[in-house]
Amino acid sequence: MRRAKLPIVYSQGFNRRPRINLASALPLGMTSDCEVLDVQLNGATDVGEIARSLDAAVPPGIKLIDVDKVMASMPSLQSRLCSAEYVITLVEDIEHIEQRVNNLLDAEDIPRTRRGKEYNLRPLIEDLTFELRNDEREQQLSVR
Image (tube, rainbow, N blue to C red):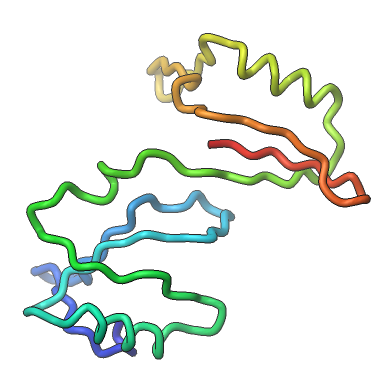
């Protein structure tokens, strides 16, 4: 943002930070094919100009897909995010993986306790698929 010379709004106080909000922060060690974020700018700026400035300033390997104007009165990105898809490449064969995936999908409850609080993780899994890829029999799980 700084290289693109965009007029970013900063928080107030001793430790000022740019007003940038990610829709969903990635877990440690994860990579992504697409990130969505809100950036608050000072004054009205042309969306096309913002896109051109960012496109010229991003490092190699990062591709700008879209820039859109969002009103401050709209709900936050985080509250509008419906789901994410995770693809996991397994480094070792897991015994009975297909049966385990089916058992997980058939389960009504997947209980979890964290910090003394009980959670049911099952409603968070929309879809789970297992596939073998390549001739090398690479195993992948896709979770949405």
